[in-house]
Every structure is written in structure tokens, then in C-alpha cells.
Amino acid sequence: MSQDEIDPGDEWPLPPPWMWDCDECADLYRTMRNVGDRIAELRLTGERGVDWDPFDSTVTTQIALGAHLAARHPDLLPDWDPDCDTCASHRERIAREREPGPHRDFDLRCGREHLARHVYAPPRTVGLL
Image (cartoon, rainbow, N blue to C red):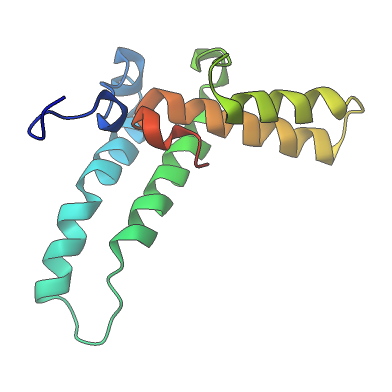
């Protein structure tokens, strides 16, 4: 691969059509994709002394989108990826927690939020959350 080519692991996937049918999905996705430009602008024009941290903002918007997808569209999320170590970890955690209750609910929610990242995040970053 030459230096001017983008590694496929760094490319943002095209969101599935069903995401555009949900206004909240579309808004959260646009916010996530535009936050870097918005933070760069605020660092130049925003209030002095404010920490306009692009990394906090980027991660926060990704978490918000993942939480929404996991809560509102769990049936539309992809299956577990057999090549993803984080998927395997979530599956094991869910399998261990067999009793219904808050621990299992938490494990299921975290697993779904991770699956959501497979929908909208570059492959290289999916396993980070």
C-alpha cells in the first residue's frame, strides 16, 4: 500500500439505510462525523481558556450514537464478528451471567453498544469500546 492510499481499517463505513430513517440516528451520526471540524473551529474562535478537546468530544459522540443504536435498534445490529476479540469478550461475559437482573442487563447493553460500533466506526477502532 502506498502512502497516499487509505488503509481500509481506517475508513468510516457507510451507514446502513435504516439509520437514515431514524431522525435521532441521523442527527447523532452527523454530529459524530462533524465534531472534529466543529472543535477545530471552536479552538480558533471559541472562548479563551476553554479546553476544546477533540478527543473527548469525538469519543463522547460515538458513545452517544452507540447507546442510541443499542437501546432503540437492537434487532438491526449486526451479529457478533468472529474475528473481533471485543465481540468474543462480550459474548463470554453475557454467557457467564445467566441470571436475569442488573448485571446481565448491563452486560447485554455493553455488548449491544459494541455491536453498534461495527455499524458506524472504522474497523481499526471498533474494538476500543
